[in-house]
Length: 329
Image 1 (tube, rainbow, N blue to C red):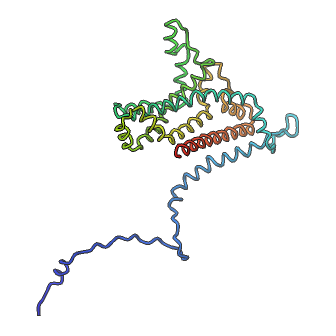
Image 2 (cartoon, rainbow, N blue to C red; image 1 turned 135 degrees about the horizontal axis):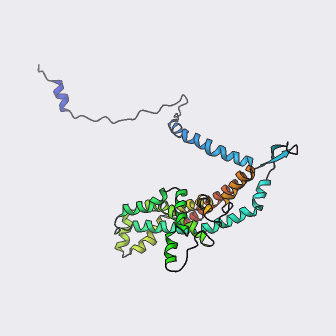
Image 3 (cartoon, helix red, strand yellow; image 1 turned 90 degrees about the horizontal axis):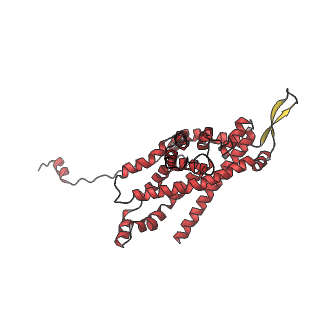
C-alpha cells in the first residue's frame, strides 16, 4: 500500500481563476429591478435651489404681470389694491415709446458687440491652435483675464479712460492737435459700450472655441498637410466647420448678454449726459419698478424680454441645425 501526499498532487494541478460576478440587483416582489435613489438625492439640492430662486420668482413675476394697482376709496385715505387686468400691462409694454427706443439702442449695440466678440474669439482660438505658436499658456491666460474682472469694475476702469480729462487716448489726440475723442457722446457711445463687452467677453468665448478645437483628431490635420493644405486652408475648411457647435453656443451667450445690457450704461451714466435712465431696456424696467412703483408693468416688460431671449436663442439654434443638416447631405 503506497502512501501519497494529496496536497502535493493538488498543487501540481493547474488552478483555474473563478470569474467575478457582480451581485445581482435587488428586485422587488414583482421581479422588476428597484431603481436607485442616489441620482435623485445628489441632484436634490440643486433642484430645490433652482425651484426656490428661479421657478417660484419667475411664476410670481408672470402672475403679477396680469395685475395692476388701483386706488379705492378716493382721496388721501384711499387704499391701494391689486386687481386683475389681463393683458393690459403687455399692451402698455408695446406702446411704451421709451422702451421701444431703448430696444433700438440695444440692437445697435448688439450689431457692434456680438460679431466683434465672436470674431475675435474665433481668431484667437485659431491662432493659439497653430503648432508653431509659442507661449500658448501665457497667451490664453492674458486673453482670458479680462473676463475675470467684474463688469462694474471694467465699466469704471474704461469710463476713466473715456473721460477727456483722464483719457490717455484723448491726451495723445490732443497732443497732435486732433482734440479729445468723444467716447461718451453719440455716435461714439455705442462703440465705447461695445468695447467694454468685447474686452471682457472675448476671452470666455475663446476658451470655449479653443477647447472644441483641441477635441478635433490630429490625424485630420496631418492628412491635410500631406495633401499640401496650408494652415489657413486647414483653419477655414476643417477647423471652423468642426467647431460650429461651439460657435453656436458662444453666439447664444453673446446674444443673451446683449439682451441683458445694464451694468455698462448704468455705470457710465454719471459720467455723461448722453446716457439717460431709460437708455437700455433693463434700465427702463428698473425705473418703472422702483422709481414709479409700477411692479406689474415692470414684470410685464421683464416677461417680454425673457420671451425675446428664448425666441432669439431658439432661432439661432434652428439656423445652426439647418446648416448642419444641409452640410451633412
